[in-house]
Structures are given as C-alpha cells and as structure tokens.
Image (cartoon, rainbow, N blue to C red; front, side):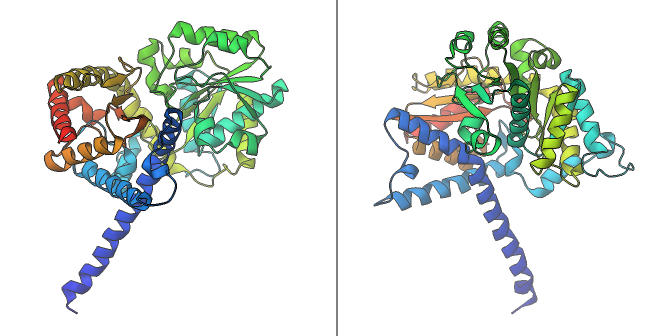
Length: 438
C-alpha cells in the first residue's frame, strides 16, 4: 500500500465518523419535531409514514427520511445563504471558535471553577442582574432546573399540583419527569394551540400550588399573550394563592412583543428559568432565577439531582458570550423575522399557493411556523433540492404533518438572515414553489 493510501485511510475514517456523529446529532435534535408530527397527525386522524406499523414500505420510508435528514444537514452546512445557522449542525471547530476573545468575557488568569464557584458564580450574578432577581443558579439542563424550582415551591405551598398548558415542554418532551422523578402532579389548563387564559386559571376545578407559563409557547408557533393578558393570567393565579413560574427558555427575545424590559417581564413571576443555548447559542445550560432563599434551596437540590458538575467553564464562557454578543441582537432578529414573514406570504400568493399560512401572521419572536397544503415529504424534498441546486436554503428545518395533506415547518431568523431583503425572500419562495410543483 502506498504512503498516500495509508495517509488517506485515517482521514476517510475521520470523515465517516464525523458524518455519523452529525447524523445522530441531527436525529436527536429533530426527535421533538417528529414527536410533534405524530401528535398532530393523530389529532387529524392520520399518521406519518415513519410512525405507521411495520410492514410493506415502512422500512423504506424510514430510510428515505434518514437520507433526507442527512441531505438537509449537508446542504445547510454548505449553503451560501440561510436565514439562520443553528449551532447543532456546525463543526466542533466552529463551536470552539465561539470562545475566541474569551478574555473579553472573563479574567482567564483567574482560578478555574470548581463545583459552581468562580466563573459560574459570575454568570449567575449577571443573569440575576439582567432579570432583576435576588439570585440565580446555573443548571446543566432546563429539565433539571424546572423540576427543582417546582418541587421547592411545592414544599412551600404544600401542594404538588402544577397548572400548565398541555403543549408545554414538560408535558411534551420530558418523559413525564415531573410525576415520575419529582413527585409533582401536572394539571392541564388547556390543550388548545394558544396561550392559556385568565378564565382558565380561575376556572380550574382543583387547587394547585404553582402556575407554570411557557414564554413563548413553542409547540403551536412560539406564541405569546399580550402584556395585558399575561398580567391577567398572573393575577388569576395569585387569586388562587398559587406561585407563578415562567419557563422562559426563550424569554430573552420576548421584549419586543411585550414592549417591556427583561426585568419587568421576569418581575411578574416568583421564579424564572432561562436557557443559554437556544437563542443565545451557548453550548448548553440554563439558570433558575428568583428569591435568594429559593435559589439557595435549589442549589442543594441541584446537587442531589447530579447537577453539581466539577468544572463547567467552557459552557459558562459560551453563555457569557451569548449574553454579550447575541442578546443585544435579538430585537433586530425579531424585527426582521416580521419582514421575512410578510415576504413569505407575498411569495406564496404570487406562486399560486394562496392557502399557505405564516403563523402567527406577525411573529411574536424571531421564530414562527409555515403551513402549506402539501405532503410533508414533498415539502422537505423541495427545500433540500433548492439548497443543493442553488446554495440558498429557505427552509432548513424538517417538515411534519399538520393534518391530512398539510405540511408544517418552523422558520428562525438570526444574524445570517439579516442579509435577506424582502425581494430575496420572495425570489426564494418562487424557487421553492417551482420545485414543490415539479
């Protein structure tokens, strides 16, 4: 074997391993969307091909979806134009680059953190200051943070019942952890694809110790109530002697819709959870913010839940980078998402797809849904082909079934999307629609 061949084998294996890692990571990231597809299809009386019983054609459908995911990741990574570049599909080198100029974020000559001190404590202090709370605690996951918060409140109120929306994250994506792990009892206010109302809080037939509100409510389209509606819902919970907790994983981008600063929004609740990796593009983690006594108790439970991690400086530095670099830009993303949404509607109408929907019509955040009258697989194929053939990716996320003959996807607008004009969006819609009809 030649030296060249010997040298190429490790490189080929590395490339294969990286491709496999990307495939697994993408499948995991899209699992939530595929679960949503199954629930939506069940409500509509249909089932996506990947969820149908094993039999003739089932295996080929699964393989087809796998290949489409691989193509979607590849085309998104190589695309010249995208509306957003989520961190989960970038390379390790690109993710590590997030910490370039880290010396501007924290003193890198200071001692490294150990079990939550040092740079971790600095992030907690900054988060509390931004949200206007007495204290904050860093958690490796939001699932852990919110279970801890609500079990702490249950201990104070004496009532483990948590009133929440049936489409909220703990009900849809956390494998019933509230009940099975933390002794909490979720009580659904509604399953309707909209935020819960004050009347629903007042009219709930049983007492509850805490009201949990997801802001924005992601599953039905990143939806937010009006400021008046939100304050009425909070007041309704207070009338029932319940505490209020905000699942604010994406709270950072809500200031435009509410027309209020972060501290005023967070100030409505007794405690707030925020994420550092969704909108802020950090490596992971989040924070629970609230009264100092609650946060101190939460830190004890964090230890019991296995969240007292030895060192967390890479993740924490990435969170500081997000607060420094992404947080100030979120209002700009929200404003431009509204430009993109309007151009999408115009483009669909011009392309002869008048039923197409952008939901909500005026996005509440920088993310929203698009609904089309077509098969989800056809929409996914058209989106990928457009990227492969033109280098422009208009729809980078998976499509699922919103009902019989209805395809649904999510759109996010970030820094890369600010380069798109309304005319750019309309032209991209025309190219997508042509491939959809082909």
